[in-house]
Length: 265
Image 1 (cartoon, one colour):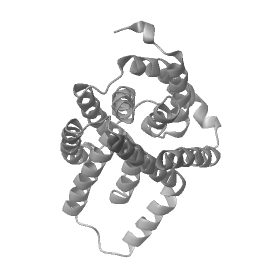
Image 2 (cartoon, helix red, strand yellow; image 1 turned 60 degrees about the vertical axis):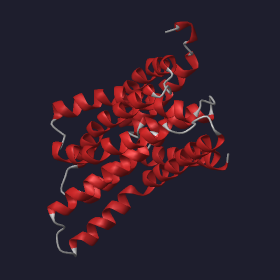
Image 3 (cartoon, rainbow, N blue to C red; image 1 turned 90 degrees about the vertical axis):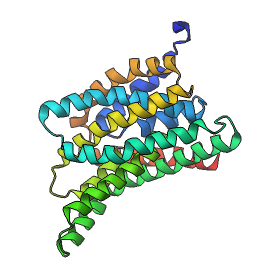
């Protein structure tokens, strides 16, 4: 490994992304991958693969915290993994079989990333009213059978496994929103904790798969981690002093503008 290629600009970017993650709780993939593609011109496949390993490492710390606080529903984690891990492996197998440098592949990955950012921005703004509306509708209908909820959780895992492996985005924004709808009696901290724990094996499998097909930039990963780990710590300390109703709309607008650039590029 050639440490002379260490890029401090990646570390600065990691620091800024880490601070935003610590303040908002938004997954790093929604911020880091588009930053690498748009600002640094990194190939989308390399950006996604490197970011998946980055997420696996950073979310491991969150897993330890949620484990100590006992805010993990292991049944939910298992059901999600039952769908997401096979979906990730199938997606990686398909990625390995295409020319990822071709214009078509680059356009598809960039376009997919852009639309996932639009979805993330939308859910940042409207998650609560959507979840509240679904909860209100369920109160006036017969209870959903436990087997149906379990099956839908596996389907959610399939969707997340595919989307996260393709774009590194979706595990947090989409995953938490749907889980809140499926499990209205779970505390939100347990939903968030379960989603983070599930994301660790998913992003690890995805990242290792991208490594096997030659799409990991190890020095970029080290540079990002050097900035983002202290950034997350700083952001976590700032978070209680920051008004969430101000930060989330600004972040949503920023993600939408980046998404627009990716979709129209």
